[in-house]
Image (cartoon, rainbow, N blue to C red; front, top):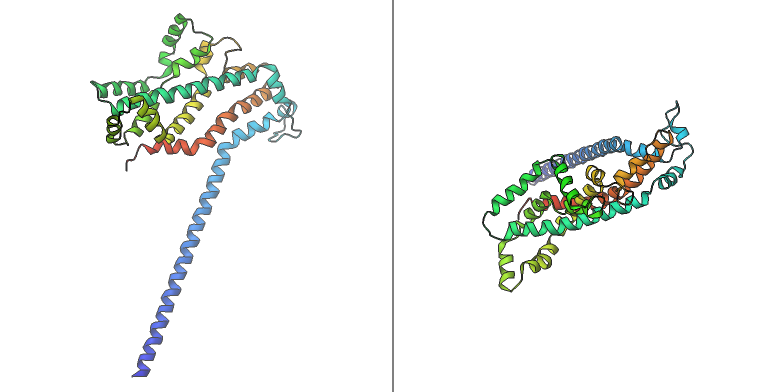
Length: 304
């Protein structure tokens, strides 16, 4: 009897050891499979990132390349004799520093203005009850379907009659609000309970104080997303500044960079050097604020 029990115990231990070995083998294979999948994804993402960044990397290479190396029968991907002369000449040929300053001023004012105006409008559509609120909001959203090219002539005639041409306010004032910003802030505000606003009103809090003391501090992610999105769009504006500015004192960097283009071969390397300089601010802002941009775009989409 004891021998039978001992044999059964040995068989049970053997089966348990076999099951444990099989589980360890399955876990090892699953870990190996996950590592292979992760490594494959990393390699594919690296290849895709390199392919997408190749034009930018080549532009940086051309910016450091003398024009004599660019216009040859050989395909020079990297400069054989790197030089900073292209950047120096780009700053000398045109007042690029002035253009960059203008773009920073215009983009900064537009960004600040849209954050303030869009947050105020979104507060009205989210917390206030007034007649025709939904209809007005629908009309505001409908403006997003109208391309800017359809209204640019009428806008030009308006600012021309006002005498605003070739000035800072003609570059800034028409873009101090946007339907996209109102929609973004409104969706974010809709995730807040109305009781928050009602409690503030009972305590004697005014609407403006509620916005600046309570709402805006709670919407940092939406403000960050709006700031990054608006600044990059304002920095890259081309058609409107081209139409309403005519002097070097008012031109933005996107317009001024085209002044480096001429008939000589050196203009290509000069213009690429200028392009590399002017895309650095927008790329830097996007890299720094990309997490904030993604978080702000999706934070108001899911409640709870």
